[in-house]
Image 1 (tube, rainbow, N blue to C red):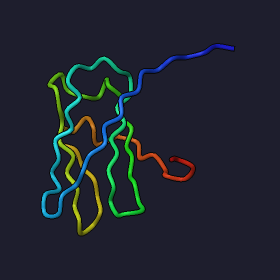
Image 2: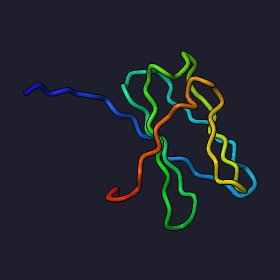
Image 3: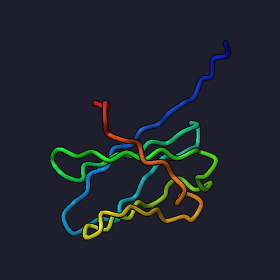
Length: 91
């Protein structure tokens, strides 16, 4: 059996009322997967996993949350194909 090791970096964001464009600063890409999480409601946490290969060489991207449709977008087109992580079973 083969074992694989991945470095995962998790960033928790705080969304503020009226400001739903948040900077996700990851600095250097010394990880394999970036997990971005934020509380949409008091009891609802949303998480997204993005491969480091999809991230630009800059130190950050922006998460854009539409509070009317609850749709999440990112500032760079390469990241639009991110993976939403279901919250079932996550602490």
